[in-house]
Length: 118
Image (tube, rainbow, N blue to C red; front, side, top):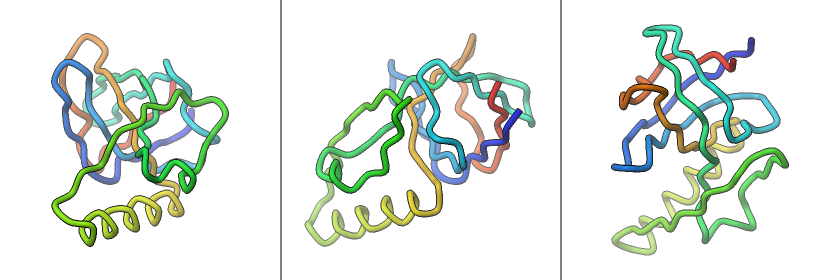
């Protein structure tokens, strides 16, 4: 088993699942990959990788991932630029955002929890 660490925000999108930022050194996480919490034993299924439409030419792609494009809206161009820089810095540090769905539960993974790839 390989370790994946939740390193940043984890938030829920009602009716869709949770978006979590994972740090990993894998060549992507394919749709259907199961992640199991070391802390609480709960599992999540990877639904897709989350990317932002305006950064499509700058994101790091993995061939095995299903992509879910989202629009990042900010109050100003300066704030959007800051957010863009942060997303790209995260990717350089092997931190990527994923849409996941709990298996038989609706909990989010906890920030800092280690998730095992099953």
